[in-house]
Amino acid sequence: MTALPATDGRTAPQPAPALALRGAALGFGDRTLWSGLDLTVRPGEFIAVLGPNGSGKSSLLKVLLGLQPLSHGEAEVAGRAVRTGNDRVGYIPQQKLIDPDTTVRGRDMVGFGLDGHRFGVGLRGRRRRRERVYAALAEVGAGAYADRPMGVLSGGEQQRLRVAQALCGDPAVLLCDEPLLSLDLANQQTVARLIDRRRHDAGTAVLFVTHEVNPILPMVDRVLYIVDGRFAVGTPDEVLTSEALTDLYRTPVDVLRVHGRVVVVGAAGAPLDPHCQASPLAPDGSAGRTVTGGTAVPR
Ligand SMILES: Nc1ncnc2c1ncn2[C@@H]1O[C@H](COP(=O)(O)OP(=O)(O)OP(=O)(O)O)[C@@H](O)[C@H]1O
Image 1 (cartoon, rainbow, N blue to C red):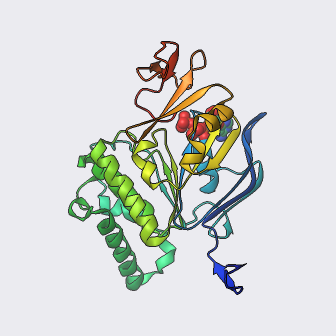
Image 2 (cartoon, helix red, strand yellow):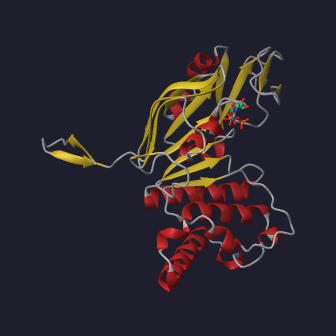
């Protein structure tokens, strides 16, 4: 705990940050993905991590999972230096359909998210472990199909179980790597709400990597937007603006708000997204501009 002056003159304890990066840099060979990154994330805070393909979003998650050392600087989760196998870190990967022949039950898959040593050995340890899995399944509403083989479950059901697996260890930080990808709208909303509820109820901080910010926009407290070695951090209203993104991309970018959705429009000749299409939304109606087709954030 850090003590900060309270408004009445006494000192009020502040919760330790869920996550802290100080002077962090990551590079491979002579390429620097990002550097000078200082980021302190409060318990329960929801951070969207945005940026084009290859800007280093997933690599940032790997650093926090202890799978990738920083080139410079420090990274801490719940006040401790990051390391592999830290059960204070939960991880939700992209939705990938599991082989239909996979016979492992959802309940067992969720249990894989727990460190076996934590609950001790013997009957008591096994019971505590079982209770934790049960609670995680209940939290995501997956109890009804938890005993079926993973291979026969729908993509949405499988992804709920991945969320349960990530939450099972009661993480201080939840790292999400495009967890809504290839889910239909209803399941996108379900999974996003589960994550949102968790951070409200348990104070779990969330780092959410995505190319499509709109489904989570109402939940986002701050955005970390990485482009070509540079980055911007701030509220969505501060970062998702034409001015801020033009500065970041070093090329003219327009940010439009259409029916509450954010649409990022890039300059012709400098497509921000390989899938850019001629824009029906070009502000001047010219054909010389492009927009990410239905996608909010350039890839
Ligand atoms: N171990 C590694 N060795 C060398 N280069 C790597 C390594 N890991 C990642 N990279 C490179 O670092 C860059 C960033 O990769 P990363 O997966 O973090 O990007 P990303 O922003 O998540 O991209 P996407 O949106 O496409 O998923 C890529 O060019 C990738 O090839």
